[in-house]
Length: 182
Image 1 (cartoon, rainbow, N blue to C red):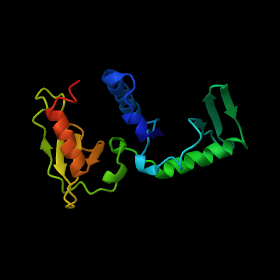
Image 2: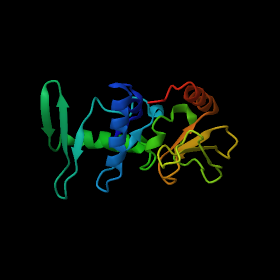
Image 3: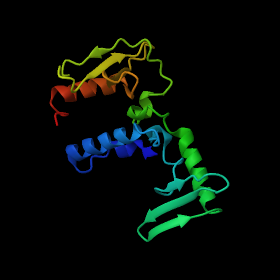
Image 4: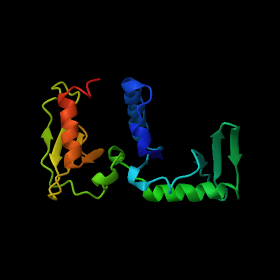
């Protein structure tokens, strides 16, 4: 589970951010790892008191929780691990579905995993390179909301980001001004 706000925090500069996001995407492609993102709209109330890891073991063994904090490291077994298992279940209920990592920062823009993308008329960005590199495509949702969907053209079944019209216009202005040139 990753909080959507963490994906937007600019720590370490653009190169570090890009590397960290690329690493998350690579992890998410592995069969034994599931990366889920908590949207900003979920708020803080669903979360926990801090990061933890939950090890789910084969039956009949209960889960074991692992916590790192300023005071050290701690493994918690049953019954204390139950609180962490319940917190994980609550987080999972509000997290975005697997494969919707790109919708991490949906906030008020919608970005619901159930958005109907079937009517989107995709257009490849003129800034995309012809060498198979930065292949970005976008298109308006057919629901009349003015929202715009964005995805990687080489991975049409991959993650999609959905922006409100105002967010999309701000993004385009930033792209034209070179704000995102890394």
